[in-house]
Length: 447
Image (cartoon, rainbow, N blue to C red; front, side, top):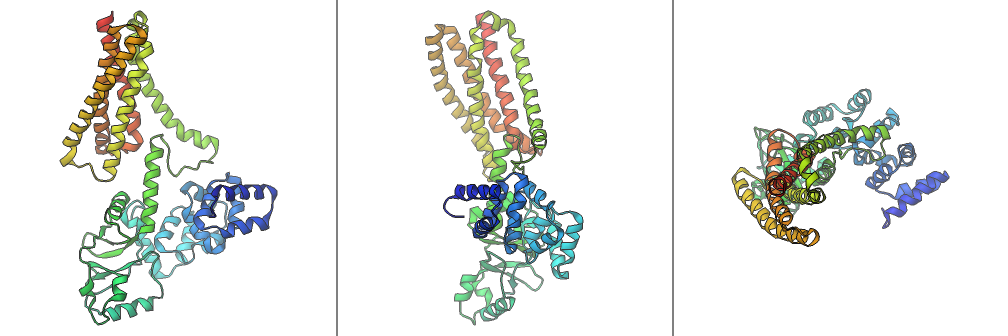
């Protein structure tokens, strides 16, 4: 897209309202498929079809792939089967597998029947795996040669193929039974002595990815080893396909979106222009969960109602203890969820991490308890209340660190996404502990 993304969107919106087809066509024609997809996602549903109608026919498949899942599903409902078939023509099999999952069954059958028998079998092999695994991400069109062939023969073989899968920077070496042996970079292949055998330039250390590995594990391997292409193998070491960096970039973006949106109880595939009723229904689930936890905290406070009535100042200061615990716990929780996602949190280092987080909590507890105590004494002229809130704050910071560390580990063992549920559980925990500590100490020493 041109330098000013906002400018393109504003122009498009004005032209849609004005009904200026020639100008619309000119703007859309200049855009990359990903930019067209962004513009479609940025429009209300009733205007998306207009942009789609001006999309270059050669780009339609790529635009569909770039769209948010919910937006794509909605758009597919409004276009004809012939348009879908035309858009999928020539699409790489891993991309096609992502797309057909959202198609109506009758159109899916037409798309599959339009493929050659060989491509149909390969597509079915990809679709047999969950889309969030290496098998679901892989392109079965991996190029392979055997180690005994010469460099010259390998290059001639590549020329007979005509073209390679997008973003391929290497070919794979297999034995006579198609078992993965290693990788040869294309740059090394074209610069080596044509008479040498491929096995002489073979990188046996190039890591292959198990077909059942999760997409998060795939992303970790690619980012950790700076890979562009990786082989995908089964339990027996047979080469099944390849994953390229363009697929992994998409995964990394999806994981980042999931991490951010799930903390608010949202889904990264949600359409921000979805109907009001649909959006309300989705958000109501977590609003209800939050309301339930809020009543739990309120129930704890109600136990100390007589104390609050006698010492009203406690009601004024309660939010200070709860909010400090919530922030401290969220910091630990965020670090733990990210560490778990990147594979940095293991059984062997959990005790060390727990000691570290508790130590941080103790140090911050001492510092901020002292600050809060002094401020409370100055504003409310009560050294007892100052000491009580200081003690409660220190207790809650320590409890928050323990909760922020433990909650994601417990949720993962229960097969619950820590990013989705961790924040709600943590907030409830820190609120309850903070109120019990502060009001409990108040009841003990002030009444």
